[in-house]
Structures are given as structure tokens and as C-alpha cells.
Image 1 (tube, rainbow, N blue to C red):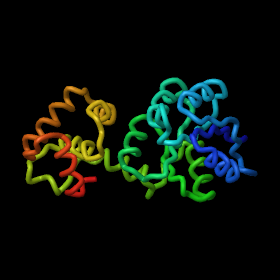
Image 2: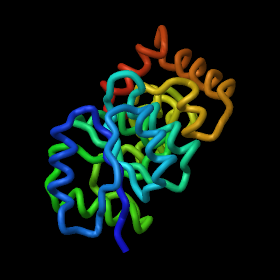
Image 3: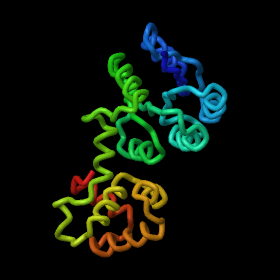
Length: 210
């Protein structure tokens, strides 16, 4: 049985490139979309197994589109495509339900491997950026911050701050209320003597928590 795929990207060259890579494979492209709005409509109409979705697009971004797709078409799996291995983009993709994150410079073998594994509900690549960021978001303890007497949860929230995530995104990621997130953030600022969340995030990056 073939894997039905929709490609979503605002650059036509990407569509042609992916299409050529998928020739004579079990993946069958059934639609092309060039914007987030168009993607949502097309997915609802065609109900594909998988969507290859660009992270950065004019208007509705790929991250925003991903959130809508997961709400309206939860059975369709989504692989995010990007030129950048930006941990913030990856984290936001994870929070909104993406199955994988693929750099556009990937070769044909890697693309086919990702499509096959996602379709079969297999885990993301062990050493890929998607899995690395996912493990990072789940980790709570870290030896670098013990001197500040942060709790395990505060360490985890601090790491999310370092990834550039909002309170709402942290709430979704950790399954806690926004008010609880705000309380953790205030505790982090007080314990680390940071003036604001931006300074705390910069410190987290400098201390290699990210």
C-alpha cells in the first residue's frame, strides 16, 4: 500500500525536488500546497497519511499550520521541513505534535527513511535534532544549576526558557497550568538573580543547558 503525501512549501523548487526523490517509491504525492491556509483545506479534502510541511512560510507559518492540522486532522502525521536546525523551531514543532523534523539539505535515503518510519509509527532518529531536543525538554536534572538550588521542575522550565518558548508553550509541553509556569519562572529569576526571562534564557544557553 502506498503512503499518500502532501507537500507544503512556498518555494516551487522544493516541490519538484521532493517529487523527484519520491519517484518509484511507496510514497505517492497526492497534493501540493503553497501556504498554510491552502494546506489546511487540502488536507481536509484529501486526508493524506503524511504532510511534509515547511517551517517558515509567509502569512500563516508552518508552526501555526501544524497546530491547526493537529486539531482538525489529528490522524495525519506531519514532518516539518526547514533550512535551519534551530532548536526553538524544533521545540515548537514537538509541542504542536510533529512526528519528525527534517533539514532540507537531507538526501533521498534520509527522506525515505523518515517517511517510512513516521508512517509506521516508529520513533524519530536516535541522533537526529528532533530526538535530541525532545530528550532535552524532558530532562529535569542538570549539574550546572545545582548551586542555585533550583528544583527539578525549575531546571526543566529554565531549559524551556532557553529554547525561547512562551509560558503557554511551556504549559503545553509540561502539562502544567500557565499560572504554575509563571510561578516557576518567578522562582528562577529570583534564585538566579536574572532581571527578566530573557536574561535567564541567555544564561541557560551560556551555561550549555541547551
